[in-house]
Length: 154
View 1 (cartoon, rainbow, N blue to C red):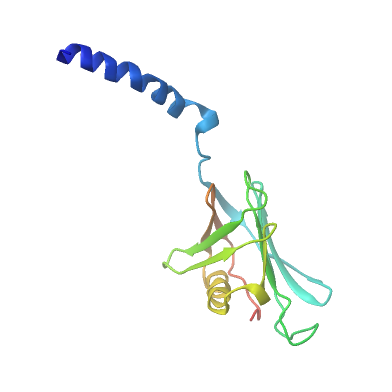
View 2: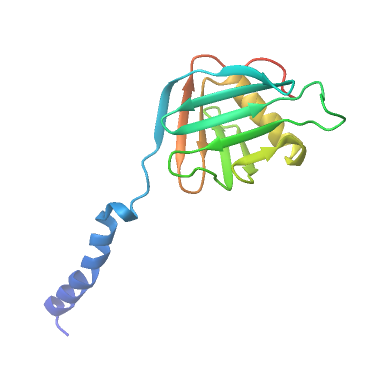
C-alpha cells in the first residue's frame, strides 16, 4: 500500500469519529457558573436548613449541632445539578485546594453515614469560601455566594 492510499484510508476511517465528536448529543455539558447566589436559611423540624439555588442547580445543608433527635446527628447534604438531578458521587472543591467527596443516595448524604473528616471539610469549605464547585462524574457547577455559610454545623 502506498503512502497516499494509507493516508486516504486513515482519513476516511477517522471521519465517523470526527462527526461523532461534533455531535451535540455526545458532548459533555459545559460547566455551569452561578455567580449571584445567596444562602437562604430556615428551620425544619427544629434543624437549621441552608439552601442555595440557581440555574437549575441546588445545594442544601441541614445542620444538627444540638443533636435534636438523639445522640446521632441528623445533618445532611443534598445536591441537584442541571443535567444530573441525583448524582451518585460528588466532590466539593474550594479554590484553596480543599475538597470533600461523598457517595450520595438519591442525591443526598446523611451526616451519620458520612466520613467525619469529609463532613468537617465540607462545613469548613462552605463556612470559609465564597466560591466553591460541586463536581460529579458528568457535570460541574461553580457557585459564587455573597457571604459564606455561617452558624454552627458540626
